[in-house]
Image (cartoon, rainbow, N blue to C red; front, side, top):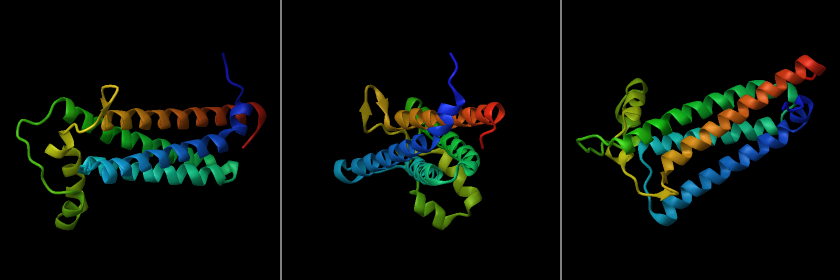
Length: 175
């Protein structure tokens, strides 16, 4: 079964708007968990939050942009989603296989103030005791697991939209 690229081409804008809305909902739920439930985000959670902010902004702007600009924005959105998925996967790994020595380490802002950026990024990806804590689950999956699945879904949708865009350009000459 093939999908008509012309159909997908016409619905790219609304699809991007749905992704932006999904990003807003993810961020709102994260803020709810932080401020209403009392779960403090670890450094990796904050990095994932920034990835969601960027994906939300890029997909929102892309949904309102002319069609000829959407290709580059879809690529950027896919790259951001894959980077976010990488951080979420690393955090999931830490949750499944916690470090033997638990140390909470510095928070994200303390790291940024104390160290140059080229040292902060490896420290973030190394994780800490906070990053391996499992404070919340739904259907047996942690926040990091759900975030990973959502990032992968966004990357897959961006890839599908790029593919459909390419098909529409080659078959019907759309931009």
